[in-house]
Length: 84
Image (cartoon, rainbow, N blue to C red; front, side):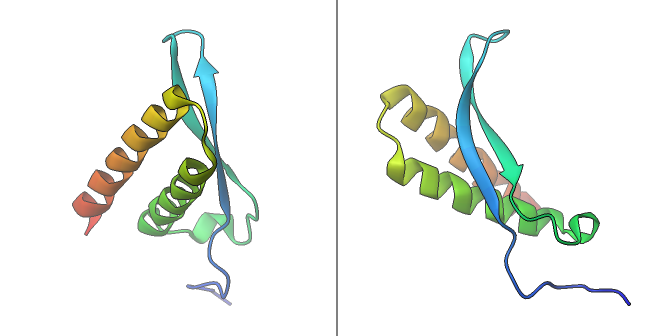
């Protein structure tokens, strides 16, 4: 049996972390529930990452973190436009 769509959206959490090699901050993602993780569409994953970044932006206090998250959101939106 093949399952194309799951009943629950993909749960992804986002967090900011420091990168020692590049002296900057990055956004890292973690799949919370990897139910049928091999059957996920790129567009669905990017949309879930975008939702996770928007949630992270709401709770962000540090200016450097906000700047990093806003750049990541812009890049994710560009990727979604290219996939559409």
